[in-house]
Amino acid sequence: MSGDPAGGASSRRRRGGGRRAPGGALAPVPFADAATATGAGAGPPGPAGSGSGRPAPTLRRGSPTRAGLLPGPLERLVSDAERFLEPSPAHPWYAGAVLLAGRGGTVALHRAIGSAVRYSAYDEATDTGVEFPADRQIAMAEDTVVDLASVSKLFTSILAVQRIERGTLALEERVASYLPDFGGAGKQSMTIRQLLTHTSGFAAWIPLYREPTRERMLQRLWDEAPTSPPGSVHRYSDLNLISLQLVLEKITGRTLDVLLREEITAPLGMHRTRFNPPASWKPRIAATEDCRQPWSGLDRGPVWGEVHDENAFGFDGVAGHAGIFSCAWDLAVLGRTLLSGGAYGRARILRPASVELMFTDFNTDFPGDGHGLGFELYQHWYMGAMATPRTAGHTGFTGTSLVLDPTTDSFLVVLGNSVHPVRGWRSGSAPRVAAADHMARAVPVIPERGRSAWFSGMAAGTTATLTLPALRIATGQGRLCCSLWWDTEPVTGQLVLEAREDGNGGEWRPVPFTTTPSGSAEEAGTPRPAGSVSGWSGRVWHGLRADLAAWRGRTVRLRWRYATGGPYVGRGAYVDGLRVEDGGRTVFDDSRHEDAVRVEPDGWSVSAD
Image (tube, rainbow, N blue to C red; front, side):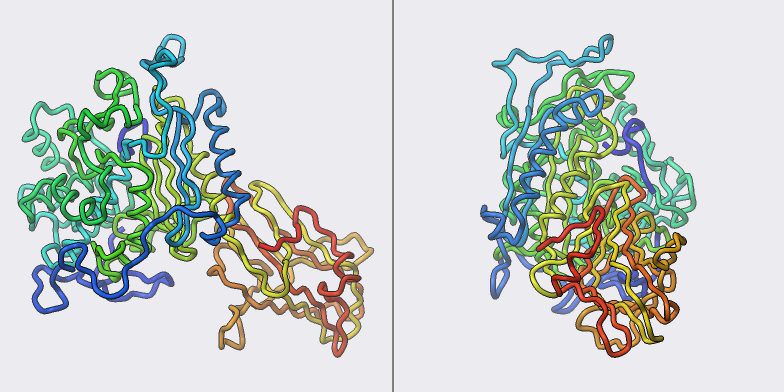
């Protein structure tokens, strides 16, 4: 229910005639101009389960080692998550949660914490939750079903991309060409792409549920004018996916719940995922909020087993932006399917090129608001250190999130009931960030040389330095060589190479250098004139060369300074194979024990992973 006024919103934009590749180059969009399709390559992928050749990976439980993950960070993922069951700072962030993490086809962590049902009501006068008697409270379980809220948008987006792939929906087509009544109030130029990337110009949210009938709700949408010209801004809006739902229902002749079942959940065996769960599921469903005004738009009392979002409730529980209930394992199946290019076992719901559209940034005109078709990209505020330009995910207002990192083939599901008993008890996204940071740390970084490398750590809001001993540079051919791996939050996180003359107390000054990805045929490398790197190195090591000719005839100290200025961090930085050459001689080499022990780490440590 991210469109609710209490839920906040964020900001993304339309591109015409193509998509932006990760580097920003314009590339053709597969299926983008298809209004109809003919020929062998344009039809649907066939019934799910009809895949040929080798089956795609399916999920099974296994150890962290089997998944290629480190057990320590996964253990800390759980212990940190449990801290948010306590006041953080004034109230628990959630009553309970289900945590699931894995890599490849292995689920290495699946753990339930806290309560699925704890409170019978919220006492506004005392700002406390009224607890059920102990024998009526229900612990969170691994298979607990949770209201996904806005994570539902991913399913609607997948259904839309399926139609683009099959040629019955065109990415650049106007929404009004499918829904003629939609085209008034300045919406005539709004496109399907703008709905999927939140660049339509719609307001973040309007209270459709206040209208007495579905017909009146639709009329309110037809009459709604964009608050910005379509394509001019990124603004996250529930109205985008509600509109997309109506398009899908119009072109298929089927309701969204039927499409969900027939096109996604049944083929993938996601039997605990649906709109409007039956009453028999209620004991296995996490409760949400004591919904009363003024914090809720409707006076419904405790909500348990039916949709929390007011507008989805107004649409009888079936809406494009919210309303799907699911469990952690089912969401992991969906994540595994997308990471495998649209297939799970012998079932295929999308072609790889279609999945690529969901993981490619269409919003390069809006830095910081990366968005594929349906998926958000590179969002540290909930993806934490898992965030890369390729990392895709989404959150839900009830306390849910899904994060997929194709660069490491890893996935993370956090299903919390953070509006139980009331939405005002939680703020921010700290549990999601903490879980993602630990998951990112669980993916090892193999040292470039030997069995260990220097590691900066991942602490937020700190500065860590790695200082070499004083070295005499006698010739004009001095240079520093090493291998470098970095992943920082862009701009606020930086790794800087600095130098100063030993003994004079002068200031540290940046040292320019060049970097070249390992295995690259590039000879010149990428110049780093500011002596620093920030952002993402591509999860590969880079060779580094820094010219020290300016220090000829002097004794110099060199250091790496890693600074994390904001509340979020990346996976950190690694330095390996530090060596300083001066003409024909090596004056420092950290592979030599007598040199390595002279390095002064402050916040850095020797790490094998």
